[in-house]
Image 1 (cartoon, rainbow, N blue to C red):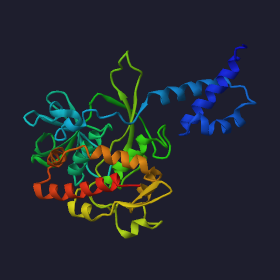
Image 2 (cartoon, rainbow, N blue to C red; image 1 turned 120 degrees about the vertical axis):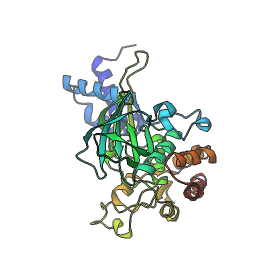
Image 3 (cartoon, helix red, strand yellow; image 1 turned 90 degrees about the horizontal axis):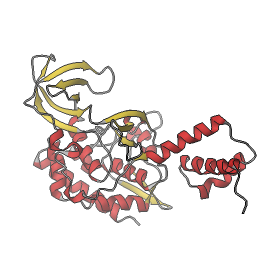
Length: 346
């Protein structure tokens, strides 16, 4: 049998990698790629680009099966108890963040750990949201709600009701990713993440809030991993906006609320199903566009994962965010209703 030529082999690789990068598979996009590439001989630059794309695709990670989901500690979250800020330690002010809607400062503790401290109404809901997202298999930052702390070099008064986020958590930022352009378009993993954002009423779904990171220390036994995740979960657990934010000229206004149980409970969740695709009630236009295209079976899959979390785990997540028992009870009723809606999708 005649062996395929090197050029033919390279063309085949072009087709396979290009199709995967577009969010499809060789079977459904191969014909289109062949029509464009078959008459051409790949250049050195083409091959280098393909090699880079193949490397990204093979190492990209968005979701990992939470095999211990029923045992996950939702009070401490992904960083665990050992990762929480030691409030008996000394915290020193480093600098202010020049950008961002809510005030942030960098601090360092006496153990050499670096933290980003966020002020404002996002501190509580972001802490809770990070635990719920991590519980079902997605990466998050190490977030902790702190009721009161004193920062040397940052005024004489203690700061209150803030979120401490571990900065040197073992991962380094590589890039940002967009909801409509990433290696996971059309996959169950991305659909599941969209469902979670809708479940939490996240109204700030922009590229700036999505990170790609890699482990700081590479394991020689494993390929380098590029982890895709939502790095800012503060605009959650309230409403997604006002009636006017569904209008074209007003759709980018951040008119939603954060961490308000009553707003969250009164907000409608699933808008409907059409041709096997679920739509959600999201009043902010940009966030609504990000949530498009979720398949029914993928939404149901995420609902089944969430249903495995116990009331104790869910309560622990809200307790970690500083919510009291009354507020937590409102959230739990609303979450159970939303999870049931996901599981009942046809």
